[in-house]
Image 1 (cartoon, rainbow over the protein chains, first blue to last red):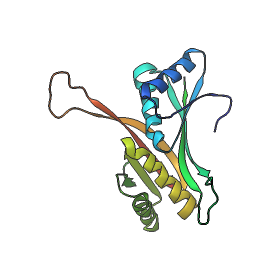
Image 2: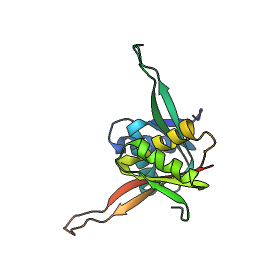
Image 3: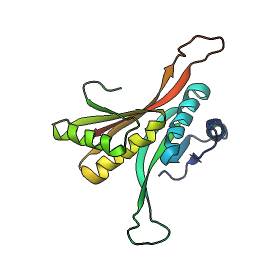
Length: 95
Length: 95
């Protein structure tokens, strides 16, 4: 994951909340904004990137998209409990 | 979207069905396999790419990831009906 960059972590709120967060970062002088999401929020992260690019900031470009896996160990270590894998995405927009 | 490549279109089936489809393409000689998804299936597409890479084909690499928007016009042209935008992803794996 990129450090030293403005990051928007996507959760369950409406898409426009995150779009506004991205635009605010750019308007406050950020050159790059990273949109990060995990699991089922990943499709929402792409919606956010597409809305920012197409509707609000046509000069914003996708610098990079990376995917990965986060591994969670179960809280209670019962017999047979296995780690859970969750996919992640990070979309970096640049202006 | 890439032409002339083996493509796996992600739907609502279990992830392992699509993982098996990718592996079958590679085993039958494909150098590249594209994993394509739209809307809520996008997070499943990333799961498929991660499982193929980490569990089955450690020599497979991500060649490219692209995102986009598909625009649907409503079927019945009522007053005020607007086009629907759906985000898309295409992950190209190379071996």
